[in-house]
Length: 288
Length: 288
Image (cartoon, rainbow over all chains, first blue to last red; front, side):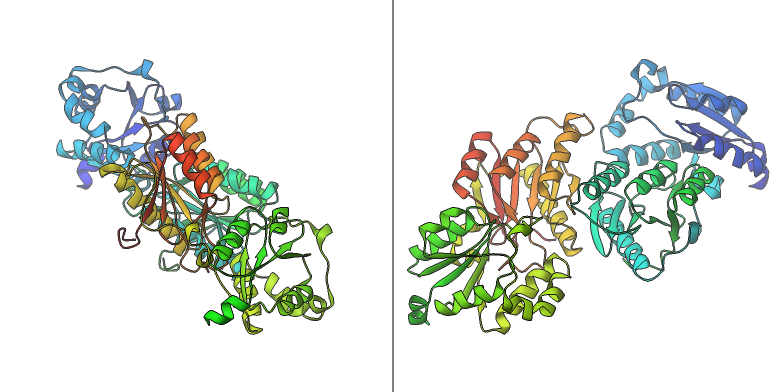
């Protein structure tokens, strides 16, 4: 296996943002060869620093040929895909047309099913799908403090309640995040997403409907139990810190090993600057 | 007991809105005497149709004297209290000042504790606190259709999931309501309240982030298990119907016997007009 790994590149199928570049660097640092395959209209042009190529949406045949040409059997699917893909970038190649019934059947299901369907499609053809955090371990966190100081007493009670609430709505498949202030659950995430949920709490605070003194309260973010962490991880990043800061909350709690931290250095820098803590909770530390 | 009930009036301590008037009418129709005690700045002036008197916030001594003078031992606490009471209407009478430590201790706790503390304070002095729906049974609903037609198949699946989600977040003491569209939980209520949650779904729909065809999806509203239904009921009313209509949802599901319907006739009229169903779910019909 070790021999095979050094011979065969790991293929990074890249959506938008900086994370695909980070994963490519981590793979190289780990002594792996990489092939970055950027999705046109999504991937960062910076992938040209690595052995790379481009595909359009709809070019599954071209993707499979690139993988075969380079002898890649391990894939990482990573990076953002816009909620509304740019369909001017859509190209349906022959393979895709031939396999359209299978693809449409996958696409017609919900988000989670599209991802698990995509994984199954690759696995059925002999490929292995690997999580980005399995290549770049620093995308996730071990238990402990990431920024600021570990909250004590009431602050830690808020963390425990927020993590428990986030896990509970995860079990319902509703959302991944919750906000607790002074022992009260003030927001639960569903379709609006984490950023909009934090903004709501900022508005409730600004309007006086929610009041607290100083920096208290915590945003918790957890994986849903049914989430496939190889292709779909809860994420936080610099913008999460800024939003939490604006809402007047004390910090962010994430589940250790299960939540991706985008641009970790910048995330930490902003958190330290704003006085916002980031703490990774050991799953054994907080009962649901 | 029957004799005592006809001799002693039922005291209706009235906050704002039409429900206190409705309860007073229901008590009279049931052959009871009533004494409506309106809270200044909150209660509807229409209470002057009934045997009534007024108190200010802070006049607990005056309230207890009114109850004694009229021989009232059963109390209903009903009607809205503004989130920000008008403190120009505050009058601290001697009894209130003397018992300030007890009152402040009650006031310093959360919403639920204020209500249960208030009940305990009355009960410790020999009064019985009765729920408004125990006097006016039509404030709540038996299981079945209230407006429109009972949803079938997928529509009923949405109801079951929404009720289950609402009960789950109720167990967390976070909120009372949830919205489900086509098998997906799209909103969970916490501190923002039901109206704001429905408005959020309307915005997500208008912006295209949530899409559906025709009228589908349901708002569910349930009591929290720890809620004391005598003084604190989940409510829906005409404005709920209008909000649900604007969000493009198919209807409203409530728990039978546990959710108050304000202005039932107007609520039904608007629902029928808009084509929005209202359905009361038997607790045995939907497992959590």
